[in-house]
Every structure is written in structure tokens, then in C-alpha cells.
Length: 502
Ligand SMILES: NC(=O)C1=CN([C@@H]2O[C@H](COP(=O)(O)OP(=O)(O)OC[C@H]3O[C@@H](n4cnc5c(N)ncnc54)[C@H](O)[C@@H]3O)[C@@H](O)[C@H]2O)[C@@H](O)CC1
Ligand SMILES: Nc1ncnc2c1ncn2[C@@H]1O[C@H](COP(=O)(O)OP(=O)(O)O)[C@@H](O)[C@H]1O
Ligand SMILES: [K+]
Image 1: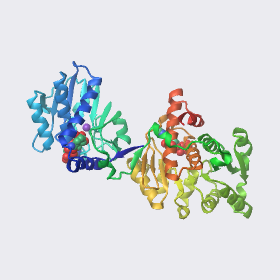
Image 2: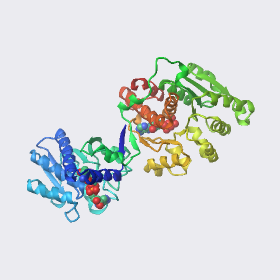
Image 3: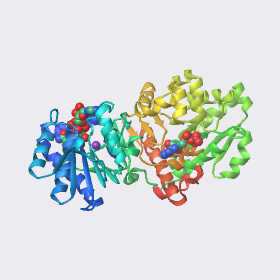
Image 4: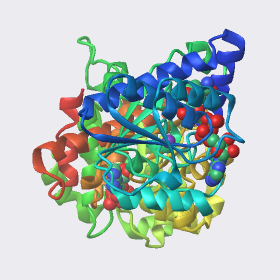
């Protein structure tokens, strides 16, 4: 597990380290600049023309220091001091003075004769960027972009990307590599910032652990080594030891979603999976997934809300360790009854997805059944219907949208997008780094519900099941993509890689 920070939190880490621990600001900066210079040396030749675009804050100061290091190593460096000294930070003024004493080529932006730039070090703005880039700075960034540097290394975060939201503040520079300091910022994990950042390298510049721990940051991501935390399968066990997943899914002419969800739950490790669906789906599901138990109902009895139907449903809910509710249920009138009965009678974790969420959006009074063991997994369109906000608005504020929805009901909200957010009920917020666009295909979401339910069945509590489920799902997508390329993945193939991750 890796913590992530907002720009504001990073500034607090800096301040605490400098003021309370006593590591001087210039010492941190020296290590930051060295990490940048080393990365440039890995990618550049001494004959390359290296431009360092420097603002007059501490990001620019990092840039000036990196320019000095490269200059002293014999590289052809030009530090472009574009912001003037008047309002420069004290560290910036110090770095410029050192650069002058060491003979670094310093140039103003007006001295720049647009020409070839082999390597650009982007140190205009870091986590201090707090407003739209306009006027002269915008012109500078446009000019730099026109020069088309062959390789760009961003210092801390690409200039123009907001460190909390990943949004472009008017204009931004794309990097091939971002060398960030101490902890990764949310802005390089979230689109479009993620795309602008290229490969993100986190340099340890000496912040002690306590400088972050005291902030109690709630943002985190998972990495491949975290798979060790998933439960093992004890030898002395039987199928009852690994939980029972009830998949309430599918409708007439729609059996695929139930199949994918049930298959994924089995592949994740659940001991028993039962599909509760309409009678029309019995044969196809039994043939496709003979390992699953199939229990069926008639749409008519669900519509009428008969006693037999209610009793049958209560029995299924009592049987289950975890429930998936929604994939492929469709939008017939009876679905509301079905969703309400499950929500009212289940006392186990429920993964509520797809048409289950559509039902909630059309019947908001059903949220009165929400308890802390609900995990909702909306994509942006479903979230728009649940909240009444526009998709474009949600996309720009994924974290706050997911967090607000989760907190409103005390539930876990997995907001699915190219970067999925897990606003967990324990107040931690998960930002997913696995997965790829090959997964943007029908059925991927159904697989996710099954994976999360499988983890719940293995005994993970809701917050962990949601975060690990999203991570496993994306990781499976990455592994299938490696084998099959980006266009041909089928959702069911995601389930075939779950074993190779664990
Ligand atoms: N000792 C420290 O504090 C350390 C700081 N470090 C660097 O310091 C950076 C943060 O430095 P600063 O806080 O000085 O901020 P920045 O250098 O990111 O920004 C400089 C200034 O630009 C101004 N600004 C913001 N948005 C603007 C806009 N749209 N148009 C024009 N001006 C704008 C702000 O007033 C800000 O103070 C980090 O990203 C990192 O690179 C690192 O060297 C690590 C150690
Ligand atoms: N570009 C992408 N990069 C990474 N993951 C993606 C991308 N596009 C979609 N996904 C993932 O694929 C899944 C799609 O889910 P969903 O939209 O519910 O699909 P469906 O309803 O067809 O099953 C989500 O988990 C989402 O995060
Ligand atoms: K930068």
C-alpha cells in the first residue's frame, strides 16, 4: 500500500520536516534536484541541448539546482529564468546565486531563440500552482510546446496540472517522466494529469515517516506486492469455509451479466456461488457454468410480490455470505420489488451494481435500506443518475463525488472510470492504478462485482474487498492485455488471469 497526498498535504510534510525535524529546506532541495539530474543523465547525452524552464518558487529553485548539477557534470544546460527575482522564494534566490557562482548559463525567456531542445526539464510550477495559467505564463508554455522538446522531465508534477485533481489549469506541459518528491500526488494518478505525467518516479528525499503519519492522509493506492495481504486457503477447510456468493442478476434475454459475475466470484475463491435469476435463464446458465447453483423465479410472481416469491428470496438472502445485486436485471417493473426485497432482507454485504443502481436512481426512497455493508459500484453514467449531476462535472471531481455519496449513506462507493475511486466506508479513499482501456468493453463491470463479492466471501471486510477487488480487476486486465493486445479482450478472459495474480 502506498499513500498519496494532495498538494496541501505535501506542503505540510515539507513544513513539518523543515520546522519540526530541522532538516533545512535547501538540504531537501539538493536531494530533489539530484534525483532530477540523475534521471536526466540516464536519458541524455552530453551533446544534448538541455533547457530547464524555471519559475521563481521552490519548483523553479529545484530546476535551477538541477541545472547547476548537470552543468558541473559537463552537460549543455540553459536555465530559463522566466519569472524574475522580485517575488522569488528565498530558496530560489539562493539557487540563482549559486548558479551564477558556478557559471551556469542563465537566460531570460526573451533571450530564448526558439531552436532545438533535446531535453526539457519542466520546473515552472509544482504543487504551488493554485490558479489558471494566463497571460505571459501561458505564452511561455505555448512557445515551449511549439519547440517540441524530444524528451521532457517534469519536476514534482507537470506544470499546469493541479496536484489535487489532475485537472489542466488552462494549459500544461506533457512529460515523459515525472520525478516527484516524497509521496506521489493525487494529480499524477488522476486523468488528465496521469497522462501528462508519463512515468512517475517517486524520489526519497529524506522526509521522515512521521511527517506524513501525523497528517493521517486517507488517500492510498495498491501495488503488486500488496497481493500478499489477501487471505490464503488453509489446508484444513471445505467449500463452506470460503463463503457463499448469491448473484441476483440477469433477466429474460440477458444471462451474460449473471454468468460473468458468478464466474468471477468463483475464480476469486468463493466456495459456493448461486445465481438467482428468471426461469428463462436456467438452461443457458447451467450449461455455461455448471459449477453454479441456479435458483429461479418467474417475473410475474416478482411483479405481484407473492408470498412464495418473498419466502424464496428471504431464504436465498439467509443462505448467502455476500450478495451481488443488479447486473443484467433490466428495467421491468418487477425489478423494483426484487431490489427492495433483497435490501430489506439481507444482513450480509451487498455489491449493488448496474440495474440495481438504476432502480435506486428511479426510486430514491430505497436508499433508506442502505446500511454500512453496502458497496455501490456505479460507472459515471450511473453516478450521474444517482446524484443528478452531469457526467462531465463528475469526471472533473471523481474523488469528491464518490466521497460525498459514500458519506451521505455511510456506505462504500466504487466510482468506476479509467481511474476508479473507492470512497471506503472506513474513510480511506482508494485511487486505482491498475487496468487499461482494453477493459472498456461490455461485461467488465460484471466481472468486477464478482471479484468484490468473492473477496467478501473469503472474509475481507467491505472497505478492503472494494479496494483489493478494483485493483485485482485492473491487474487482470493488464495481464490479459499483455497477451492479447488492447482490442481483443473479452470480459470473461479477465477472470482467467485472476489465478496468475494471486
Ligand atoms: N523545501 C521545500 O519546501 C521543498 C519544495 N520542493 C519543491 O517546491 C515546490 C513547491 O514550491 P512553491 O510552494 O514555492 O510553489 P511552486 O514553485 O509550485 O509555485 C510558485 C508560485 O507560483 C505562483 N502561482 C501559482 N499558480 C500560478 C499561476 N497560474 N500563474 C502564475 N503564478 C502562479 C504561486 O503564487 C506559487 O507560490 C514543490 O512542487 C517542489 O518542487 C522540493 O524542492 C522539496 C523541498
Ligand atoms: N480506459 C480504462 N482504463 C481502465 N479501466 C477501465 C477503462 N475503461 C473501463 N474500465 C473499467 O472497466 C469496467 C467497466 O465497467 P462498466 O462500465 O460497469 O461495464 P459493464 O456495465 O459493461 O460491465 C470498470 O471497472 C472500469 O473501471
Ligand atoms: K513542474
